[in-house]
Image 1: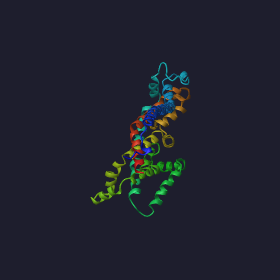
Image 2: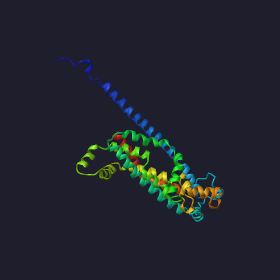
Image 3: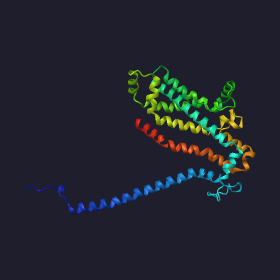
Image 4: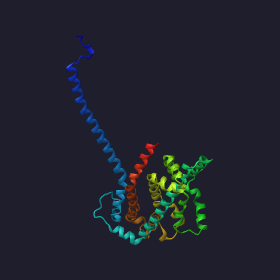
Length: 306
């Protein structure tokens, strides 16, 4: 009977040593993994505190007296909830909040659907000069708002909409170059066969856009809606240009009035200004919490479909 080759002979001592080495390496690897997780969580908590501290300071300042606003004590003792009541009695803040709500919702809805319609046209239709025309649309991003500020004012004033809320949102009926680019990239990821099958079944282009393209890009639509909602909610330039009546102010324009006018807060009563800042900030925090999963869904969709 032939003997087994030397390299195939199993050495019990070597096997035992290898097993012990692997057993010792597993706890060490587990400790390194635990340490990395702890460091990551600590880093995450640190940056979270750095990001939310300014808002916590603002909230704390809104609940203090005039002499305690800048004392850096994060927890007011006692909290002055009456600052918010005084603010609403000194200035029509609730009316300003209603104006901001109307303007923000209308601006977000109009720019979302108008941009989606233009983006779908660029993604679906094939026609000569399409890329050139799309490049011209993107080139408008290079123009700052201050360049077109005077022409826009003259147009809306000639139409009789000066000192109204209409100019604050109606311009979004003509879409936005940035949102057109964003939504076009999502529409390009959709299989063209879906649209062709709908055309065979007799669906119009508008029906395809409404019933197929929009539902499949819901995450992107919500992202655009939230972006524009935030932009319109915090916009100060347009209300400064078009709105002159105090009753028509939006919240940012009202905040500016509080800073400028000592009779409704001003630079001597910073706690009222802080309270107004909290009122402006909290709705956007709620909106982003409600829409955060759609942000993640949009990122995942973009990553998986290139």
